Amino acid sequence: MEAAIDLHIHSALSPCSDDDMTPNNIVNMALLNGLDAIAVTDHNSCDNVEAVIRAAKGKLVVVPGLELQTIEEVHLLAYFSDLSYLYSFSREMEQYYDGIPNDPNFFGHQWIMNERDEVIGQKRQFLLSSLKLSFEQAVELVRKHKGLPVPAHINKPSYSVLSQLGFLPSNLGLTLLEISQNSPINCNGYPNCKFIISSDAHSLGQIHDRKMIIEVKEITLYGIYEWLSECYI
Ligand SMILES: [Zn+2]
Ligand SMILES: [Zn+2]
Image (cartoon, protein in one colour):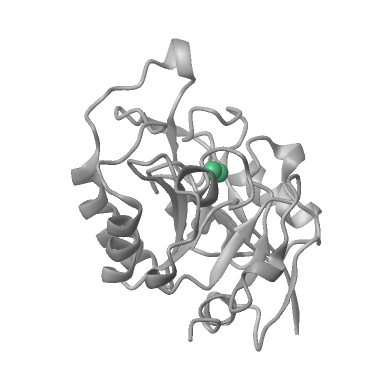
């Protein structure tokens, strides 16, 4: 069956995101847009993922995930088949924070929320700085915790594996890639790869409608995750 997905959305936890990107606003906009599955992938933190999963319960599939920034300023998405894997990954990842605190007046707030959209805290670590992890180390860490590493918006002129490293390292076996619809790319250069297009939404109006349709056995976290991971050879 067909599933419409948008697997790259930032909540109000990301300092660059609008403050009204709350769990319920994201879920309701996704439902209005006819989506079947989303992922909230904040920069270097997963602190709002559980609230989004709870807000979406019974209405929308939410794939646990986040978006890492490596020391080379490459953005790498990571998806997990279970929230517990995301949490075990996150605990280890936070050891690689650089310790720089956020300045909300300059960069914006980093709100942590519950499933009723109530603010329950602010993230202290500035989330737009790089982890003390190389791209290769980040890929390995995601896989160590049973996650799926997906280079983000590879055709963007900044913060992508192609803009920062100049190439996609072939030794890492990365075969699922995210492309931005706003930048050109010749997909023929990646014959063994599968592509997803997501919104990278930082405001509610940017969340996609049924642009990216995939064929799955069932519209569940299991079914979506199986589609994402089955391209690995
Ligand atoms: Zn990014
Ligand atoms: Zn992003």
